[in-house]
Image 1 (cartoon, rainbow, N blue to C red):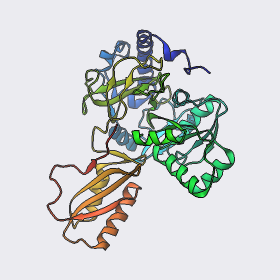
Image 2 (image 1 turned 180 degrees about the horizontal axis):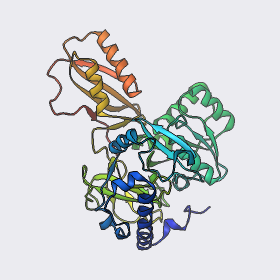
Image 3 (image 1 turned 60 degrees about the horizontal axis):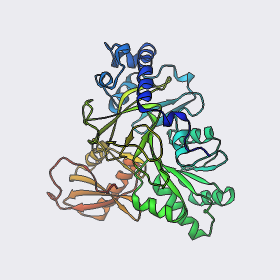
Image 4 (image 1 turned 45 degrees about the vertical axis):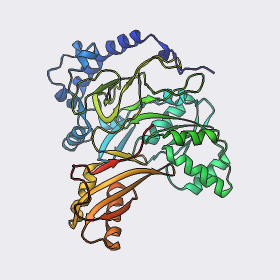
Length: 415
């Protein structure tokens, strides 16, 4: 069994930089020639001059909000794809809505490398609990697993009893999905007397893998790693382990360039300083050049004990704005503002996100003169309708919540 997916992972860092920035001018030139959105966004850029990180840092960043805006004016992809919608393999829709293409070809999202680092191998049976409906998450990991030679159970989320039947009968060796849901499956299997002990490895995403939860999985005989991927970019970073099993940071995928910039700008920060993750992908169908993710991290110094030589980041360190992810779903300040508009009798509102029993929980705190149970129920229904997530509602006296402009408070502790 080889330690690395391929020889690219162990190449000399200087050779990697030369290779990436040798390809970058061609990527930019092609994007500007075939994608009107890129031609407009990068107007005046000399593609052949972008041959270093310093030159790349001079290009404007592309933010998700802008992508949504231009997609509404120029559907379906805002002019940022290099081919028409009919040339793609699949067309996805993420909350926003934002529309993303999936091109044709094996492992289009570049997920195989992350799965391989997590111990997935040819012949494994993978229980995939990401949603296959409209959004890219399930397809991203599905394609990577099948590229390695794994069989995939397209389980999707929910229907826990049915999933337990599939697990006990098919005996999958691996799990992919959000970090919390694996615990739900294992606990429910124990309660129902179903055998889920075949699962020995997992790759999770869509939320933080808290140290206590990783330790619990380890105590159950499951090695769990996490990766960082987005619908716009595909795989960006993933965890690896050294000979002792120690996990240090997240390895940058070989098909991307990662920068850490000062939030709200495109200016790179020194290594080790926390900033916003900006990513450039070498994707011929849907190139992303300096795409600002809104997620925060920092470059991790030193060499990985796993033997891979690429950059590493410290992992997910929160959001550059107040947007946060709860149970794998983004919750935006705009959604909480919309709730307040629907209930004009409220004063300030604040969504507080915490952890209880290794599960994400959210409580909407709202100032109200009327603290009736009927109002709480109506607010709870609105919260679920807007965010697609259930949360508790706590009504507090007028003037109680801080006047600091914050509408989402992520009070989880990230280790």
